[in-house]
Length: 456
Image 1 (cartoon, rainbow, N blue to C red):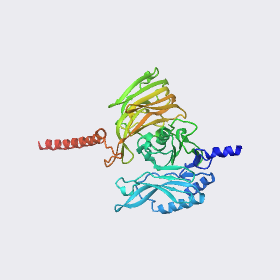
Image 2: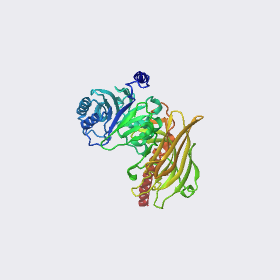
Image 3: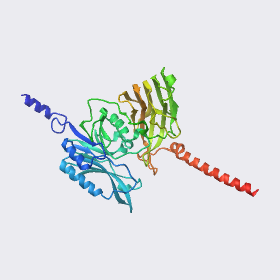
Image 4: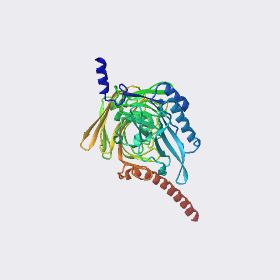
């Protein structure tokens, strides 16, 4: 009788695969010196279902690309021998419009070594003949369907367009915006969507956050529905303060944090145009004179992202800085962020339509108590982020994406809703152009003046 009841429960399970198999095992390689066949064989020994190999860094040259076919054959053979799904990001030289083009490609090999999904993007934005027209998906024999992305898609694509809870993300991402770099934004994206991200920079189990491990490979058991039993805050902990890239602050509205007033607790509203953010800060310890300074920063507009894109952005944040400059905020290796925040609350009314908001948290401490809430008020999302007992914060805030304002380097809207971008051009590109023009005019005036004086 007990056996019969167990069988009935099994058959009625919401899982669409074998009873009890509501999870799958994913792995990523953490080191570049772990060659592909060895990594694939190791994954097989650990009963891994799907493995993501490390991504090469983007290169604008064609060096070492003549062995693309040999690499794919080697991986296909190893995947078949090991019986493991394998995802790899490769650089490929292809002929396009009568010239050689460099293309980055995501390839998925099944357990038989067959390629079941391909996602390609050219390095040169002009080479559209090499572009994949749609985001690919692929089904597996362990009952899970994955969406295949590159890391820049996490920033460029609205999560609402995907009806999935399992994503494979491969390919490097280089950007000047610190919290939009690879693993930083992946953590926030997984936290907001509750989806599993198996990426070349780590594994994120939805709101459970980054899966850690030791050795050359990280292995995780992931729930297929993307719903972990535990929640963790999306905190990024840099190994070194000066490892964070400097950020262009030329377009932000920034107010210095009043540390003296923060001991008692104080509120301040900072606006960029019509977009305003409310800050409440209370500190319990502000450190010594050697501490970094903090700024309250707000931005609403369009800014450059990666090589060829300009993205609609709304952000409210508090960040640490060794000194506020027009163009950058850089933390040195000897800077300390030892200020203790008893409480920080940041809120703002963000665009709701074709938009999304994400928490951004960087800290040199491991544990912070963070809440992130979104409430719809008329046509806006009222978003609030809160931290208590925050120590050693580098950045804390809300990053909003307004996808309808995106456009690429050629001026084409990437979301079929081209907006007025003059505010961006006048604040950065045109300003630099007129600075350059003014310098040239001054030189010309100086030369003409010398000539006139000699004539006299």
